[in-house]
Image (cartoon, rainbow, N blue to C red; front, side, top):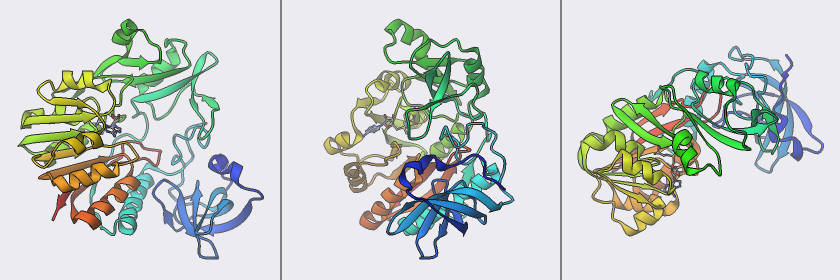
Amino acid sequence: MNFRRSHKRNFSKESAPAETVTLRMERMAQGGDALTHLQDGRVCFVSGALTGELAEVVLSQNKKDFAKGFAKRILEPSEFRTEPQCPFYGKCGGCSMEHATFEFQLEAYRKSIEELFRRFAKTELPASWKIHSGKPYGYRNRARLVRIGKGWGFRETQSHNVIPVAQCKVLTPALNKALAANTFPNVPELSVFDNGSGKISYYYKGMSPAEFEKCAMNSVQIGDAKISMDSACFFQSNLEVLPELVETVKKAAGTGEYLIDLFSGVGFFATVLKKNFKKIVTVEREGKALFHANKNVPEAHNVSSPAEDWLAQNDASGADVLIVDPPRTGLPSSALEAIAKANPKKWIYISCDPSTLARDFRLLSENFGYKILNAEGFAFYPQTPHFEMFLELKRV
Ligand SMILES: C[S@@+](CC[C@H](N)C(=O)[O-])C[C@H]1O[C@@H](n2cnc3c(N)ncnc32)[C@H](O)[C@@H]1O
């Protein structure tokens, strides 16, 4: 079986000359590559291959402790291998798991994250932790588009090249319809957002305040909460599965006096929890989100600041519930230490990168005695290796 659409993209510049070896894949690693071992015992990460497959692998990175490569030819395919539906698979860089069935992807998230926590955090995730999932395609409600000719495209992985994309399988039908109609302004880059209830908004740099008000402003209905946002600020990108994360957070948070929502964006979690707490503080670095936080949770003290700075100046120890939802980089170490020392009654950690979550949890467990009370996963980004996690932590 020829592996037609290549995975060379990540490695092409680094191999001179590239060695080809035949390898049997052992398991999936967190991040979407298959993991196996070379004859000399080194771990080898192989893109484009699946557990159990025998593949001809081009080695493109040879380090002392590990190697990386891509599957050039699949000699014995997995029963979970499937034909990628996107013509830009392997190029655009978005959906690098498209060669696996969705069923396989969900199992790969589970096993690779369990292994990550086992190895790096010396911790077992709670047995049969739940993974919430929705549609495998047509789920993504936001995108950053780049102008190419008269149409739009996505930037190719690790390069400035733009791939023209008339349609994208993971985008919502409404966003694909808008792409096809192409009534967007002719600007170099555009952030588009589908609120799931019929309004597509967009933002580009240099927009006039009047156009921003008309075209970038939007709102999202989650249960009984209408959340104000705009296309320039952060908002979650899978509106189908997001209500399940909200329910999980609500259940874990319960009710109390004092809620602290750090890395709060437009005050997202504070908004859905506001009826359950008397005193609320939200902290978000991005100044533009403050407008929405003040609209969404006017009863809260909404702060525009890096969370680590706020924590250095304020005592979080009285919090009944403290939520963190940092970017992929995870928690800044000073923020992690300050929260661990403050020891809120309940600490909810939401993460869009299991590797930095495992790194942070390791520090919390080794240095402060934290344990995982509950873990749940959210397949927010099918066809990609990205994954959302919820952890409820407790110092014991
Ligand atoms: C994953 S988003 C979560 C936002 C929000 N909780 C939500 O669900 O919509 C992470 C947010 O953290 C913000 N951020 C990044 N670094 C930060 C920092 N050091 N302090 C506070 N906020 C930060 C980003 O601007 C972004 O809004």
